[in-house]
Amino acid sequence: MIPCRRGCCKGRRNPGFRWLVCGTGHSGTGWAAEILTRLGHDTTHQAPLNYNGWMNGYIAPKSGVSTPYALPRHVRETPRSLLIVRHPARFAASAVHANLFTHRSDHHDWIYRHWPDMGALAFWNTHTAEMTEVATETVTLEEITTDPPFAAAVFTRLVHKRITVEAMTGAMAEVGVVNTHDQEMRDAIALWGQL
Image (cartoon, rainbow, N blue to C red; front, side):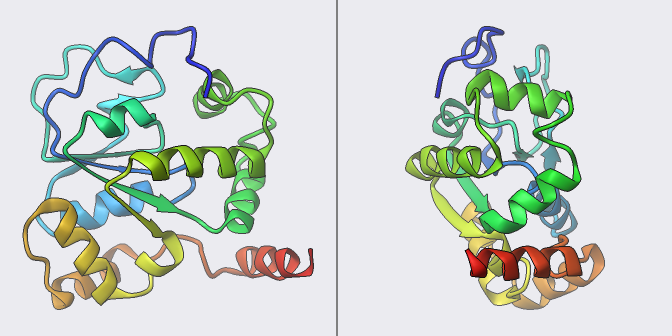
């Protein structure tokens, strides 16, 4: 990773969040924030940790934060962290659908500030390798969104409070799943298998 020139790699520190859920973007960080919050474990999505690092003047942190804009430094300064890794074919299909690597956006600019000159799969590979080294735990999006007992155990370890399978099942029914199983994602996996 090349340090950015805009300063989000240094400077402001974690203002007190106890856990951090991270991923590449289009990896389930928003889903995780919604699930945890419904379970009574307030988790803010992106606002306190965005493409410019920790926000200035953010004084009243909730219990946790979930964001695709975390860097290894942000993970290291948070007591507990969870990296959600989406299958590379599904990430690439979602990134193409969202024009993540072809159209300028805050997320696009953030990626190229830190991992320049990479396409979707090279970024996925490099980001996943770097973040796996520092995250407390790494899980796949496909498993955590479809297996309530597994998800309950993972989130219990993250928040340090017991989450029952029944509560997790209810929260998952309310929130729904990330687009891991729609036709576009099935096609991406089928194509991946042919490579």
